[in-house]
Image (tube, rainbow, N blue to C red; front, side, top):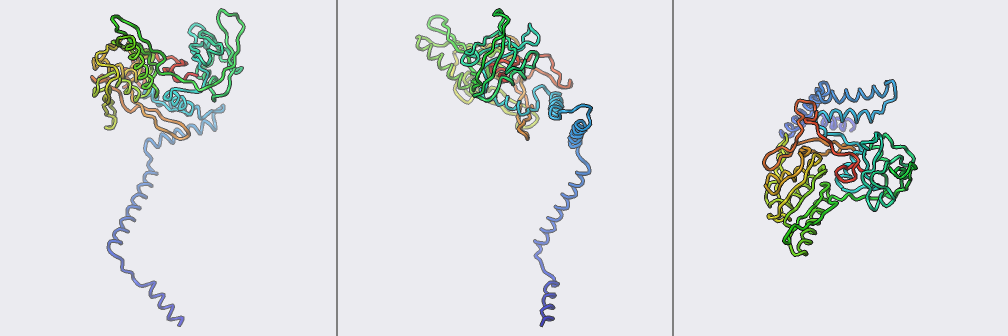
Length: 412
């Protein structure tokens, strides 16, 4: 009996199995595909691309420097400097954003931050001195700090000769914490003063000032200072314009002219620039277009709503050499559409469309993907990087560092 069972089992196992043709064909195809990808992967490993070679070389350079350089090396700082040197060879606005830079970019677009409401700058007449450029009421002003004071120390650390970014980092902190500020005031004696400032959430208004001035016969002219194109800029400008129009109506007249002050406004969000433009230009009018390498980058933005300012209201836009980016989009649209006049000096000329790509370890890559063009087809970008390794042509005066308004997002 055992022999019979063994023979039956052996016969079943060794019996040929008849498989359907579709199964055999599909299985062979899958095996062939797997074999193909394995061969390609092995070939790819044996022949890395030029990009992969450069990445490997960069890593090897950092590892060798960290292990064998004559003095200890901060590889993080070395990596950031090397990466940004590479990116700045393309244009000055393509850069790697570390954790701190990413937070500052978020601060600028949000329009508020935790600090003491103090604007600082390098004193042009006293080398190494940190000058108080602005002291906001409700913050540093209430503690006795005034414009023109010189900051000597922060929490006991001397700041004379320090980089402004380092000084601002000392002033910033979590809301609710305190910081000690030692400063001296010219003409008030040599003895320094010391105050304790509370860090709080500081609001950076996009529209710090708006006013109405009478002209004649019930007519009036509105003035609006637009300091930045932050996320709150459209709402603030809309409220300011409505207030001016209401004020003119209460005086028995109308706002027949508007002065929009964009001097010192270094730009901001494209969405804010489009919303601001829609309040000033006719419905359906082109505002700005973008052009880059990809088909997706070729876009024309048009006004999607009725303007808040009537067509018969005369508009004048004030500009200077620090008017840039989103400010140039608005002023360019107003000029090309014959909606108003432009007064001032030549603007900065930053017409680059930039994309922000999240990277690991809470960092970002900000890089240029296209250029901005006004409705008439003029490229806003004034700087020419072709064939000169990223050198600015012509040399521009950069926006000031350390300003407390939104034109300088790194304010403490």
